[in-house]
Length: 361
View (tube, rainbow, N blue to C red):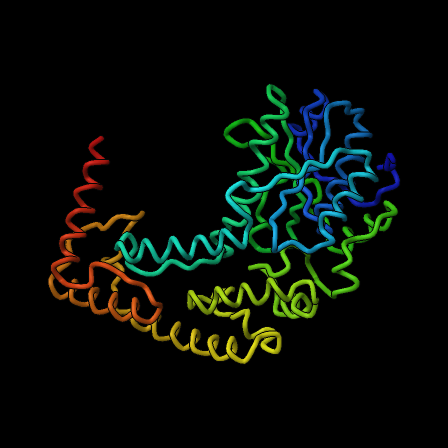
């Protein structure tokens, strides 16, 4: 089905670089998640390509994040692909899905702490400033597939990013290039949320059921690090999300790290938890408070920079770090090494020597 762009009232953002690549029939890949923005971006992109006479390859590509995905997300992507007459590529991270990545990160954090490869415990969850959920499970999975499939061709990678979504995205460009020459294009940069829903309706499609039926304001993971409390509550109300909810709260309990920094997922729908889990969660929150207080004794210049100590500690500093490590290890249940002044001095000395050896090479 071809969409008539002339009838469409909202401007599709573009640049001379994008237009030139389209004119040369570049390969165009639109990342789709099942959410409204990627749906609208795909529709608008195909309309733009049709109006420009583009005859190059076009695909939709979906990175499946596994247990955290809504069950309707992939079907929504497939309906979109069928509507556009396009192929839908589905890719997955070979090392496991997002939930497994969070769990593996916690296992790694405990190991690194026990070896004094980190001075403080590293949170298991992705954060707005460290979105490895996007970089590792989407970007790093999608890009190699596109380069393999479209080897030798100019690639335009389309995303449904909108400036209205956040202050950071408000500063974003319409298009830019990666080091490998891939053009990243954001055709609906200046659209409002109302524009997005209007265009989906205009196309004859329906958005993901989670918007109308579940009351979600945004659809990504069932429980997203960027979700509002209203969206977390709406997600927890859906039966399909209950096993994931309990699994994620279990990781909060084990790690003593809240899912959203200061917002605990276990507080969103405690009625879904067993009595034992509720009690364990309350204890985890108390342990988290104690851990934070303990780690405040570690001054900034006692910490590592880019994974390495910058200097040897004084005896008093080593004693402080030893006390903190013994207390935190007991709180979280880690069998850590380097719990005395002497062993900490030895570890710092070895790490500094290794850092200098690598710098010399």
